[in-house]
Image (cartoon, rainbow, N blue to C red):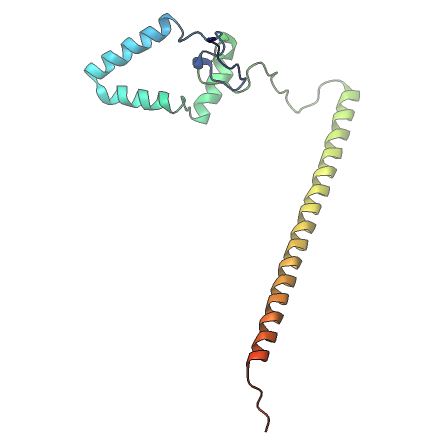
Length: 158
């Protein structure tokens, strides 16, 4: 029986996957547990809130997350589940100084916009097609109802 953990790229840094399946993070984990115990002794609502926050997976408001990513990612181990670990920062959309690259980028953006417009048109046409199918089905059901109603009603001949 081997003691290995799955190494998923989406695993949070505190689950032990990056440490080769080792449990915990050493002294840091022990200090966290001691802190929780003391918090329960002196101010239990705060400790309870911390445990709930921890069980929810350390959710962080977007503004705080952006602030932390902007100012502290250079420290290496971002503690709040940085989802784009190893990703290159996205460059600004301004001119790069290379006119050929800027022309290429502009042409690609125009091509992608044309493709987006084409796909939006296809979505609209498909929606119209589905609506026409619904109308045809409704018309067919109504006609079947009227035929059945006429067949069941007694004809009055005077």
